[in-house]
Amino acid sequence: MISGGGTGGHIFPAVAVAEEWKAQYPQSEILFVGAQDKMEMQKVPDAGFEIVGLPIRGLQRKLTLKNLLLPFYIIRSLVQSFKLLSSFKPHVVAGFGGYASAPLLFSAAVKGIPIVIQEQNSYAGLANKVLSKWAKKICVAYDDMQEFFPKNKLVHTGNPIRLNVLRSLQQSNATAKSVWNLVEGKKTVLVIGGSLGATTINKSMEACLPALKALDVQIIWQTGNRDAERLASFTDETVKVTAFIKEMDKAYSAADYIVSRAGAIAVSELAIVGKPVILIPSPNVTEDHQTKNAMALVKKDAAILVKDADAIAQLGNVLSDLIKDKSKADRIAYNISVLAKPNAAKDIVALMIKEVN
Image 1 (cartoon, rainbow, N blue to C red):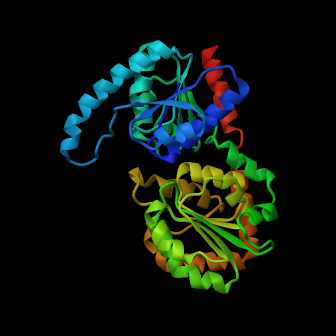
Image 2: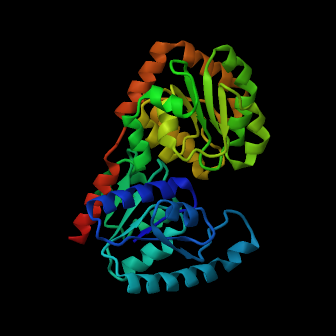
Image 3: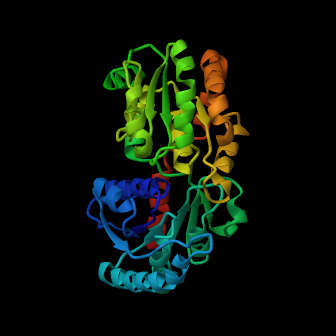
């Protein structure tokens, strides 16, 4: 059984491990457990796996009446988790963070079923910190995670990457550009704001679009649903505006430069892709963990950081300078590629199997 959700950052690595498990053990059964009405209830079936939703809700980090109902949701989710574990009888349970994983993994620990957890970020989430007490192994993507977890349980696997992203390594830049109806040989900028989009990045792109067009570059611009309709009018021969990119492998392959948020999975995917990248961390996350993710790369000269508050004013100049400075772009691309962990899913599956055995 696999649990985790709330955001793509928890869901996509869980799906990557499930895909790897199924590739190695095609006769086995896999059941996902998520939170009702959250994005995992759509994304997991889209990936071909069965999922059950719990009535769990997250803790609001401010005074609100919603927190008064939280014990009720927790009890209901725990009862349902015990029933699921009794009927499905998993050999191992893997958790990928988010409050959706807490009831199931705690219930599995009570029943003596081995649990393995995976933490994507450089700053550990609350659910994983609580569950680490019962975990057999804790798979991490950053150094110095003993600040949050028992050191003897830590394994540095990196973040599992979806198969379609790994396939981007096998596609040529020219072929991918033809898929997007872009001109072969012309430099292309890929702009991605995460699974929900990023308003700051969208406003920054609006501000710097004239400067980028003056440099004769092409743009693939993922806006997210919130801004998609408003920004659709920018689409032309050199600017491809889309709410969501389903085939990220083709977008990554077509890109020569990338502008992105600094979510843990985005950072791990960018390392696999190995292109020069500008990171604009979201300020609206717990403990500012996206800035910590980005700084881990910046310290190794593997990315450029632009603060969210400065992005509208600065992104155009920073991106233009990067496009003009080939040696800098090549250096960043090489340094970020060195950090890639393409075998993370295989390594996590191996650890899970070891616990089963």
